[in-house]
Image 1 (cartoon, helix red, strand yellow):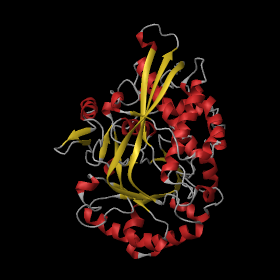
Image 2 (tube, one colour):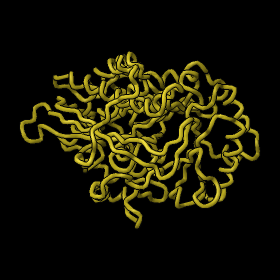
Image 3 (cartoon, one colour):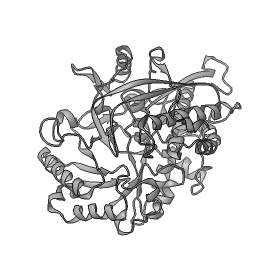
Image 4 (cartoon, helix red, strand yellow):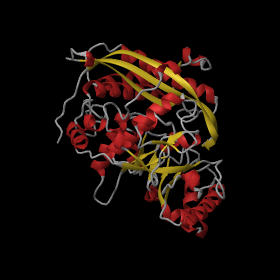
Length: 473
């Protein structure tokens, strides 16, 4: 068992940047179709307690898409306004984190700021899921800097609990539960990709579900739902036929992104899955259904017999007590997303491990469309590999042409440092998928799963929010 060695640090600076990301083809999920959105980059500088050499300070980084209409889906807000809400979440978090001027652990910083972050954002009309985005991104960058300062990998550092994670935000657990979970981790050497099939994606023929040029040999597929049981059932039947043509054992998950109005609509879809011969191909492959109903309806709707289908929450995961509350309603799983917070993923994975048994299995899944090639994919992949996520949503990078607008020299630096993750097959540097899997070997490096940082000089400062004037009140 690794010896716990939490290290204390002091924040010196936090800076935000962004870069435009154009999608190679439209991606429709829920009520929005994405053609482009900015990518956030965070740069922090820390000082490590007791260090007198040049390793006493370190710079860390993180990255994530600023995705519209996912964190905040209120219909009265435009997509641009919901992105501005994320920018404001970041700025509020920056002020709270920098106000903590003493030496403390990385988790101390997170735990001491998250409550004030949620409360302050609520006063600014920012909902909890969007409020958590700011701390989530800052926390990743802080951890990257800390691991660089002590020259430890994410996997070794977290197994030794370098961040000082404890149960203060999860009173249903004990400190010993978290310590035992962390110290017992054996990171996965490879994680299978789960190929996303968006609502506007082609099903049949060239470029369709069975096209290896599109699915990259994936054995897992994530199928988006639109919320109409009849329409969804017809489309799923077509996808099932396409999967049959692959001639291999594939598994699927369904994701409604809150589009099913209530339990009755969800029941209608599941009845079709249970009884319609045209859906047998999908039903026999189905692992779980993700976030079928709106987050507010979810909290008020015990699943009853529907719980047997192994439902999970995602957008409803907006607090540290969301998983226990969902469990009481009949849900068995929850998504891990670095954009919702790496510490919350670790807490929830600890819960799933502790709760499983006596005939019931609880689990954490890998779902994240805010990740692009480079820093974001690598950190989210490392988190999933560490907590035991065996297959993860193909993180949106297949909707973008490789590294997108990233300068060539920066993309080449990532490819050189992580040759098991990237390759150029004549069409530019892209994520390298090996028989349906991503390899994690090169993520075992000093820092949070990356040997290189973005070219800061090629990024522009984070835009100041302008369209959410009511947030300034």
